[in-house]
Length: 222
Image (tube, rainbow, N blue to C red; front, side):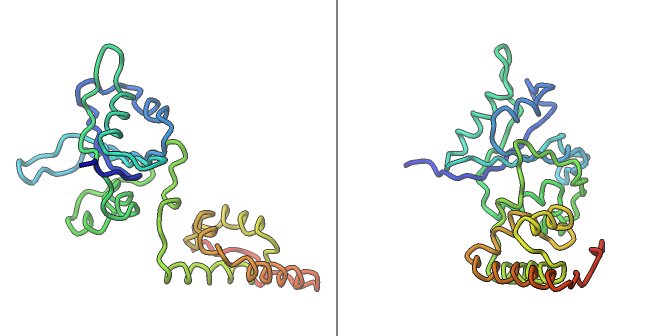
């Protein structure tokens, strides 16, 4: 039987494992695929044996096209190995079975299951994003959430008198985090609404033309 293929994978790296190179981050980046690496997990309790588990990193690997877990393992292993020493520090290369968003949250133990199990939480600022890995590109929004976020976009355009898509993008680049928006999310929620977006931007333009300014001058930082 043909082996299952997918685009999203998880894997473990053991920095104390045999053949683990000091320049491992650069080597992974040279693979050319979007990869996210967790902070170093050195505070995971070993409930079975006591103490702490072996130090490790959790990783997410995104392939351009569906491939097998074996091919991903080989590719990472080759990247981390040298001509004189094979890296044996990679383990458990698996297809993502849950949402990739949940897997990403697990990198710092902020996923629901990790929170319930009271696992040590790591700093999300220490997540490494290689080759422009951006979790918002891979999060699939359901219809209800899309509707809510689209209403947020509509309100922003109306309140701040944004006259075109570039104004909207600039706004999201600067203030999007306050509203749960990224450029990719905006693109997803406005898809198929070209006519309505044109009406919104035109309305903002007409109001500014009449001398009406934005209803709010400052964006709330709360």
